[in-house]
Amino acid sequence: MMTAGRTDRWGVPLQTGGDAGVSHFDEAVEGLLSLHGEPVAAAEAAVAADDDLVLAQILRAYFSLYRTSAAGVRAAEEILAPLEGARGTLAEREILHLRAARSWAAGDWDEAAHGLERALLHDSQDLLALKVAQDLYFFLGKTRDLQSVVTRSAPGLAGAERGWGYVQGMYAFGLEGER
Image 1: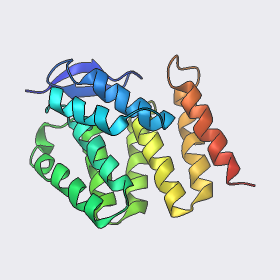
Image 2: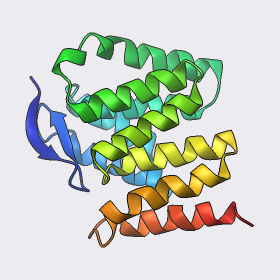
Image 3: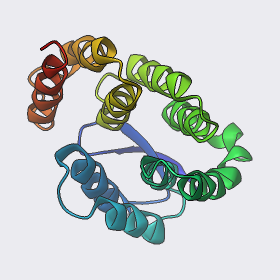
Image 4: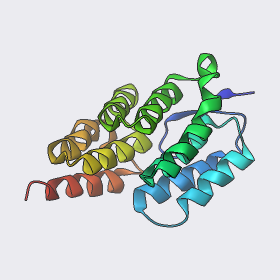
């Protein structure tokens, strides 16, 4: 049974059955942001600890989609399919990420990136949405969007105790596209 009232490391609300998977989820997101550690294993551990932690399941699907292969798409679709029936019980953040992951799996990378931007409008501190959106813009070769997605989100993240360094790094990466 999912409950509200918990947040990820960056203060964004999570729907989860308890605290068991949250630290693994945070570790997975931080691994993605820093390109360090074992984020895929951490996402797997989050789901193993709490299969009600829907964003951990969606994160697993994102990792499959990062493989940019038919096998990755099939794996993501298998992860996402059971979540479709739960839409009525999901919070807005989960719904927005689910839509974005489904769009990416369907091959509509533009819509996936725009869906993640909608997630950022919902909560500008959603570093998972920010990172995946920026990566999608990179894959699409959209250098202007690569930078602007961070620029639009930065005011909501400025001075955040955790995560601000990642935002600055993503911004700097976006500036490289202007060269």
